[in-house]
Structure formats: C-alpha cells, structure tokens
Amino acid sequence: MSELLNQLWTPELQAALTVVVVLLVVLYLLSIVWVVRDAYLRGSYWYVWAIVALVPFVGVVAYCLLRPPLLQIDRDEQELEIALKQRQLMQYGECANCGYPVESDYVLCPSCHQRLKNLCPVCNHALEPAWTVCPYCATPVSVASRGRRGTAAQGRQARPQQGAPAQRTR
Image 1 (cartoon, rainbow, N blue to C red):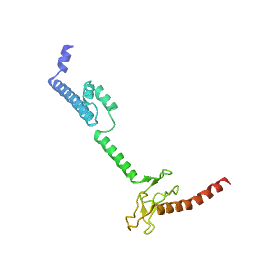
Image 2 (image 1 turned 45 degrees about the vertical axis):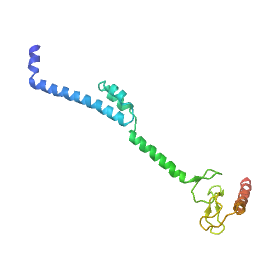
Image 3 (image 1 turned 90 degrees about the vertical axis):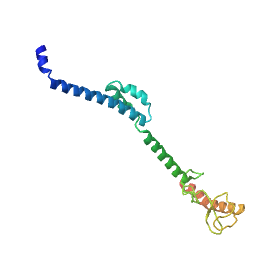
Image 4 (image 1 turned 30 degrees about the vertical axis):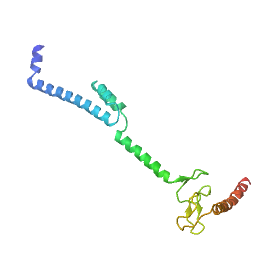
C-alpha cells in the first residue's frame, strides 16, 4: 500500500495539490475581503459580517442571502429622488375644499369649482387672497370688491350645483 502511495505521490502531483490549496486559501481570503467591503458599502455592520465570513464558505453564502438589497449610495440617491418628487408635487397645491391637485396659477378648482384666487378688476390677473393691490397693474383691490367678486362667482357656481342634485333624484 505504501509502495502504491509512493508511486502516486509524485513531485508533479504534490506541486499541483500545493497550487490548488494555495488558490483555495487565496480565494477564501478574498471572499472575506469582499464581504467586508460590500457590507461597508451597503451601510451594514461590516465587522459582524467579517466574523461571519470567517466561517469557510457558509459565512459567504449567509452574507449573500442576508445582505441589504441596496448600497448606501443607492439608498441615498433613492431618498433624494423621493424628496425631489415630493417637492415637485408641492409646486402644485391642493384645493382646500376637495383636495384635488391644482396648479399655482389656477383661479378655480377644476373639480369642485371652488374659487382659489381672486381676479384683478382691471387686468384680470389672478391675485392671491391676501393681496390688497394687484402687482401687475398697481390697482388697489378693496376687501369689498374681493368679497363681491368671490360671492358673485360662488353664486354663479351655486346655481348649477343646486339644479344638479334635483336631476339626480329623479
């Protein structure tokens, strides 16, 4: 038996096995480095994953199964995109009456016809409710004319709405 083993255990086989073992050790060490680096980039506890990765093969497989899905930089970019979209949505307002999204220059809500802004009696530009003068033509806007234009518009829109429920009940 030992003669057979001596015949098989040639210097070439010994060199080949040494190369295979060295490659496996290098691969094992590189997998630990990869786990640590990847865990750090994903914002995870890299030192905990380094200890887990010390368990040969099982540690790396466990990390691959349990690692966070996004890199930290991708997560930050995603949060910035969400914040940007929220800011873009905030450029549009909401109707205080029905909650329908309205643009900043709308005078009436397209859904419920609620007056959102007043109109200048001279140039017909949209005015914010708190303004006392038109910034486009410098016409003073009195409280009475703001209220009168608002009630006139509300009266115009109140008539069709009063007739609409009567038609629905028939």
